[in-house]
Each structure stands twice: as C-alpha cells, then as structure tokens.
Length: 277
Image (tube, rainbow, N blue to C red; front, top):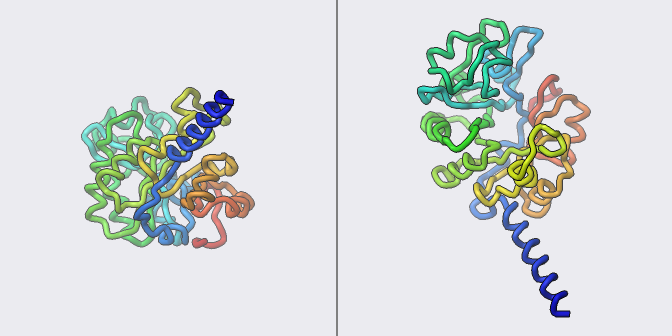
C-alpha cells in the first residue's frame, strides 16, 4: 500500500510539473482582441506568378492595400541590421551561398529575391511602409543563443506607433521579451516536429509539447494548423485560455476548419474573402 501511495504521489507531482511547464502568461495579460480581428498574410501577400516574392516590399505593400495583417520574419545581418528574410541561408530565395548573418546589410543588397528586382528589405523599411496601417506578427529568427535581433528589433519598434507582436520558435527570444518588454505581446511558435520528421531529439520533443513555456510565459501559442489536437496546445487554449494562432493556412476550406481550434489565422497561397475575422 505504501508503494502505491508513493507511485500515486510521483504521478501527481509529474502531472503538476507538466501543467506548470506548459503554463502561458496568466497575470497581467495584454489585450489580445486587437490581434484576433485580423487575417494575416504569411510573409506578405506574395505571388510568385505575378513576380511578387515572399518577404518583399511589394508583398507587404500589396497586403496593406488589401487590408490584411502581415506576418514576417526578421533576422540579423553581420553588422547587426535587422532584415526581413525567412531562411537562415540564401540559397532558396537568392541562389547564393552562405547565411544571412555572413553578410553585412550593404552586401545583402546585391542579392535579388527569386529572380525579381526585389531585394532583401531592412526591417526599418517595412515599418516605414506599413506605418501602423495594419498589425504585424514579427517572427524572430534565431538559430542559437545570440539575442541581438531582439535588442535591435525592439530599438526600432520603440519608435513605431503601429500595432505589433513578436513570436519565435526560440524560447530564449520569448524570455528576452518577458524580461525586457513585458507589455509587448509575445508568442511561442511550435510544430509537431516528431510527426513532421524534419527534426528529432529531446529539444524538438520539449518544444513540440510546449514544455519550454515556463521559460518565456507566452501570451499566445502559434502552431502548425495541421495538428490542432496536440494535447499541450489544446490545454493552453482550453484550460489556460491562451490565444492560439494557426500557421500556415493554405485554402478557404482549411481556414474554415481552423476556426474551430484557433483564434488568429496566418494564410498563404490564396486570398480569403474578407480581410477580417
């Protein structure tokens, strides 16, 4: 009997620990209604057939004109300039070798996006273009532990009057905002990494199940829309009442299905009928 009590106690302790680890921000939550009213164009309203590449000034201009919110990716150049670019490497979008962080901002301007005349934008240029006309979801791209992009993005955003929030796969970025800018809405990005087969290992398991939430205490969870029933994601929304963002929705049918499980919607490859939820 004593052994049973010990086993039960251990199981209860582990369950409590699990709930504490996945817990998002509970106290002093910011107003998320400002973000849930919009649909967000993934990397801008890009269209390869029309010569408008992802994360380009043309794509952002088109999203603003259509009245959509914008999701975009920011990482840091070698000389610490925040630039808008998704991949860590230049090969897919620019046909060049090396990583974004291997080049200075001026050197990055020699490359063109997907064979068009569009170049890699500075984040400051995008802020100037959008000018508060539509909300931004800013994904911080951080490979390891260098948080320079957080500091530099924050420096620019302190001078920006528009609505924005940040998100990242890297829990240390969420921690940076928890420590330095608690008033800014912050989101933990995740995916069913082990199901997707792209990544493996302990880190992927922990991130997939939102077991790093204790680090940054995010305000929302952004998750691959193909996996709405992942337990930790569902508990964050249903038990903790945290908002949930769906990425990346690729059809009107998928959008209709995602509305059952998510609150914020990031789309790509089609144009929704309306720009608001």
